[in-house]
Image 1: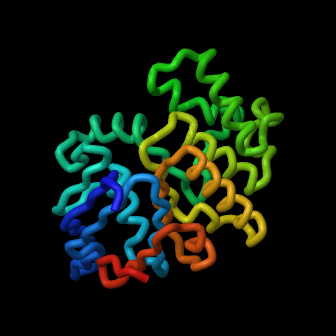
Image 2: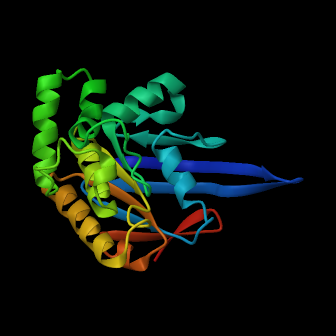
Length: 226
């Protein structure tokens, strides 16, 4: 197996529901080698999005560790996790999470500008990524002028523009019709493989998981091979 890019060990996460504590992740382990597309398949409420948020440093586990590209996220402060996420991760959400007051080009350029790239260089790289996702002529448009599929393409361009170590995708086709979802998944797979990158995709759809090199199933708080 290739060298591991991401390693999660003994992850535990629980929530209080009424007078009970529900364990969502139960001593979960996960190792992902470099250049792999990994799908995590599970029903709604199975904990797969919780896992993705912990891997992305958006949320923290009750116990356990997460290492990505040599960095131990569990030992970082909240500020340092935010900086790591901006620099080393790309995240694609189900509901796009584009900023409505910024143009398409400006939305894609955000990760670069947060990393200190000059506005001119950020705009140039943003335009290149929009070309890659087939939206080269829409940089000056605002998100509300785009279809759902086009908005998700913008979100993919934003997630990849700073060449992150790992892209995390949380139900990226969950808000799209079947045909548009297939197009978006194909694009995400193509761009990941072209750059020799890593993609971790969480989904409830076996069809969406089919693009992956490996499919894991979330059940009872742990991951099982399909």
